[in-house]
Length: 118
Image (tube, one colour):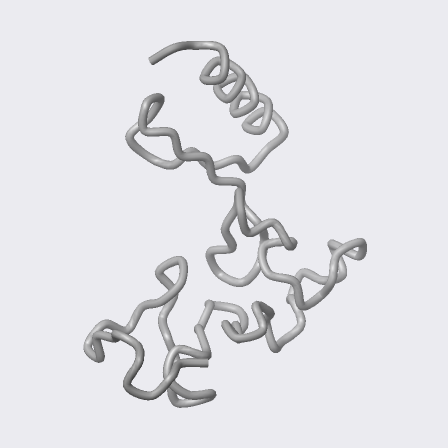
């Protein structure tokens, strides 16, 4: 919840968390973020619509954001979690993992970074 007169905001900037478009008309200033497939309530940290892919991920909550892994991943359109790793010393951009082979490559990079002095 934002305190009146106690927060900084740029009214002309319409994007919020993870570059998603804010929708201030639904739940007030900064409380609702529009993903492509569902809306996110930033106060609760949850979507207020069931994940369209919920039947494919029965082990996970159908309202969870980023499969409850917000530290190392993102959810770009309100569907699936995508692993993101950023290391300025190894790469100038984010690396994305979509397959098991991508995850293996990221583990190799992470292990290399842990054992190498830069």
